[in-house]
Amino acid sequence: MDYFYASDRGLARQNDEDSIHILRASFSRSGASHERTLFLLADGMGGPNAGEIASALAVKSVSEKIAPYLASSCEAQWHEILCGAFQDANREIALHSAGNRNLSGMGTTMVSAILSGYDLFISNVGDSRLYVLDAAEGEFRQITKDHSVAQELIDSGRLAAEEGKRHPQKGLLTRALGTHPTTYPDNYRVELEPGNYVLLCCDGLSDVLSDEEIRETIINAADLKNACCALIDAANNVGGPDNISVILIRV
Image (cartoon, rainbow, N blue to C red; front, side, top):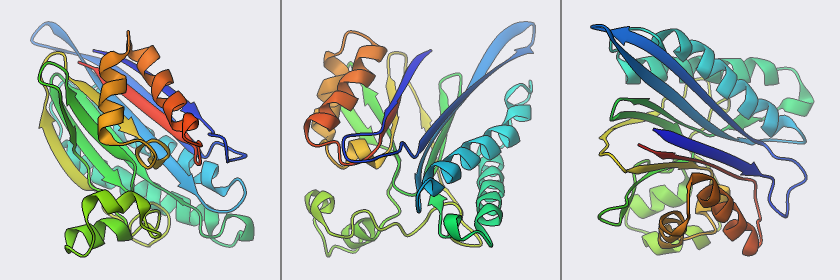
């Protein structure tokens, strides 16, 4: 397994309010060495500096909760553990913003993935996404679903999927960490194949590039670093209206 990540503030924002964290752990089982990796990407929101505080708090809180389990020789109930970690992060962000006018209303999206062998355990809140690319077949799948007003309109049939990116409420979230007393993630499990790619990204990428543009950029890149840089360049080339963060994994 290899990975690369990159982040850029974009062309229209003063600050980069996104946070990325990756944690790897090794363990032994039956005399053999194994590895698990936690990938976290959060896109903060709020007043000046509040978004970057919220996203940093979220990745720190979740990684600290997950770390002891990553190095365990036993397989854990990953989605149950991630759900608890998301709840802890939700409370921590709310506590930091309580009573502080400058931090009032801050929150963050989060998409997380634990890679254990070829099993990928995913949890998400908000509109940061996870995709899986089967390079051999050319299939590019969005695994997570956005928690947004626009997505609810799509789900109800009142909005076509292709109209979602242009909808005036596409950025209005229905779920985020730190904005409500209780916030639960959606959970997914994917069995990967050797050579698959996994992409975690914020809406600064997915809002401005089509799925096909993202797929082609990854497939045509020489390596993971070039793919990540090319994705960020492509988003900036169409205006870079938001922060852009990506994690790209090849298993």
